[in-house]
Length: 338
Ligand code: B12
Ligand code: SF4
Ligand code: SF4
Image 1 (cartoon, rainbow, N blue to C red):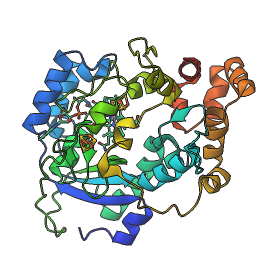
Image 2: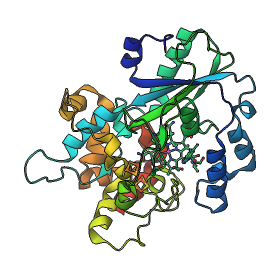
Image 3: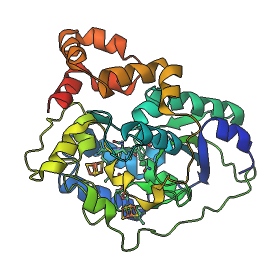
Image 4: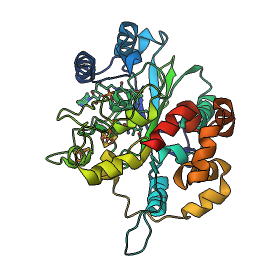
C-alpha cells in the first residue's frame, strides 16, 4: 500500500491496512447474521435485529450510496495488552493476581480514551491525507466491519467469531474509510489476499469461555457473553447458570468487557513481545489511565462507596471521554457488585 507512509501508519498505531471495492457483504456472513438474529442470539442487542438495519448491513451502498471503495485499518493494542497482563499478574513465582477486578485492555489501551473518540481522530487524519471526502466506519456504523476487513484481505474468522490477522492476532480495533472513488491506481496491492480459515482443530477459545457462549459455528451467543453483559447498558449481570466455582470467581472479576477467548488464542501469543515500558509508566503519563486504574482496578471500599454516592452527572464528568462514560455509573456499580 503506497498511499500512506508506513512510518506514519505506525505512528497512528496501524499495523495493517487493506483495500476493497466490494460493497456487498459475503454470503457466509449474511447467512450467519440472519441465523443469529432468528435464533435470538443477539439477546438484548435489539438494534441489530431492526429490519432496516439488516438491509443496510447487506450492502454498504444502502448506507453510503456513493460508496466505491474502502480502506480498512487495523489499530492494534497487542503490545499494550502485554503490558496490562504484566500488571494484572505479579511477575513473581506466586502468580498472584494484583487486581480484584478485571477489565478488557482496550478500555485503557488508547491512553484511557474511549476508542470511538481516540481512533476517530486518527481516521480523520488519514482521510485528510487522502484529500477525499468519505465516511468513517468505526464500530457504531451499520457496517459489518469484520466482513469488510475480511473482504479487504486482512484476516480470517476465528472460532471466537473475531477477525484474526495471521501476523497480528486479534487484539485490534477495525476502523475504515468508506470512499466515493476507487483508489486502484494509487495502490500497489489491489487484489486482496483472501485468507483461509486458520483455526484447524484448535478449540481453545470454545473450551476457555467461562459461560459457554461460543457455538461451534463461529458465532457468539450474546445472551451469555460476558462482554455483552458487562458493556451493554440494558443487561442484567447474571452468572447463575455457571456451576464451576473457580470459573464463577473469574467471571465475577470481569467488570468491563472480556477477552478470555482472545487470551488463549495461539495467534495472540505475545510472549515474544518485550514491554518497552511498564504499566506504571502509562499510569503516571496518562491521567485517564490513572483514573480508571484507581477507580476500577485498585478500587477499595471507600471508592466503591463514593461511586454509589455520586450522581450520574458527576460520574459522566469524572469519566468523560473514557469507555466508562458510555456504560454509566449504575451499570458499573452493578458489574462491581456481582
Ligand atoms: C454487536 C457487537 C458485539 C456483540 C456481539 C459480538 C459478536 N461476535 O457478534 C458483543 C457485545 C458480545 C461484542 C463483544 C466484543 N466485541 Co464487538 N462488535 C459488535 C459490532 C457492533 C457488530 C457485530 C455483529 O454484527 N455481530 C453479529 C454477528 C452475527 O456478526 P459478526 O460478529 O460480524 O460475525 C460474522 C462473522 O463471524 C462471519 N463469519 C464467521 N465465519 C465466517 C466464515 C466466512 C468464510 C465468512 C465470509 C464469514 C464468517 O459471519 C458472522 C455473521 O455475519 C461490531 C462492529 C461492527 N460494526 O461490525 C463490534 C466488533 C465485532 N467488536 C469488536 C471487539 C473488539 C469486541 C470484544 C473483543 C470487546 C471486548 N474485549 O469485550 C468482544 C469480543 C467478543 C467476541 N468473542 O465476539 C471488534 C472486533 C475486532 C476483531 N478483531 O474482530 C469489532 C469489529 C469492533 C471494531 N470496529 O473493531 N461485540
Ligand atoms: S468475550 Fe468472554 S464470555 Fe464472550 S465469548 Fe469470549 S470468552 Fe466467552
Ligand atoms: S483459540 Fe483456536 S479455535 Fe479459537 S480463534 Fe484462536 S485459533 Fe481459532
